[in-house]
Image (tube, rainbow over all chains, first blue to last red; front, side, top):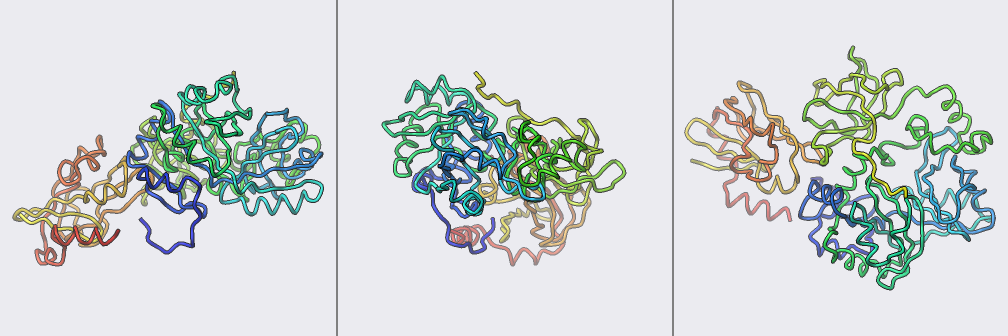
Length: 371
Length: 124
């Protein structure tokens, strides 16, 4: 309920639709975005887990890399095995800095003649600058400013999208394909940020509202705001850049070691490789873990984490309430000695230490379509 | 019986020597789905404008301030199991706590129903 003045905010191509649907619009990463629709966050969250939800994620950055050596060149900036990425496959990867911290997390898709990247909204300007500075002129870096991005997530997403383009039903998790939806050429990937099966749809900005309205006309689909996007991804144990990961957290500390490709470990040719590879061998001093408060009180971002003797061992980086499990949940970093599943810890909420436990992530099992 | 509102969107309903406190319909709408309420312990002395309770929605925690000074005489224990009552019936079953009225004059500076309605409309 803040009323401080904001810098002029950008609007996505679906802004008018959000307003027409009664969304509450809030500033987010420089954009005016829907945090929730009149039904509210809990209903939107459960809608996505049970049926299907449509998200406007057009604020995110879409970037293409052209040039024969694009995959090889991108590997200079990320620890992922991009060269091994087959045609129409996508991979989660990280832009790292010289000290092993994370500049951004992103999706990279091999579209044959180029790579398609999706990066975080708050990072997109600095990411594009970084990519241009490091990769040009051998690689052409193009920010795709005229494209929108929609996410259709939930168990009914495949049935809904399959009605518009039967070909999507055969797609597997983390693959991409081009299909026409309502006569609009779309780049579709079977991916998302909710832990559910679903799709992300990149399309020309001017066609975004038409497709969104078409999808919302399907009985299983409702619009979902950023509030539920956050609770869904937290239940799924997925990191939010700027909160759970940033320039000061390494992939190993963040428990994202899977994003460091096997071949890349041998080459050690990515920013921060010395730090990251040493942590992979010897372990990091701290680790991102799931936290389950014992009572009903949520523990928010910034909450101090204490060991059984009352010593500070870390902080919560994302904390709130999980509507699907009807309990407060959190993620945060703890000193590695306290990172084992089941470790009892305390969370300092409003001056009172409250009991909690280290628990496995995710809180809600992923239901990706691995085929 | 007197019903008054604060600028922080608490309501206080005074009946004789006892007052009931909750948050307004506007407040619950702004908060969204309430998932946790922390009420003060019975016997705690509250000072007008100081923190008395906490209400947490899915998104954030918000403080609830004492609309008047007095001592807590009862709390709504039902909110522990059903915090959603704050959304469903903020002026009724979603009440937070009851308290004594230590300084009746404090009520005079609070808004009545019509003034509060105008105040909320002014917030856009």
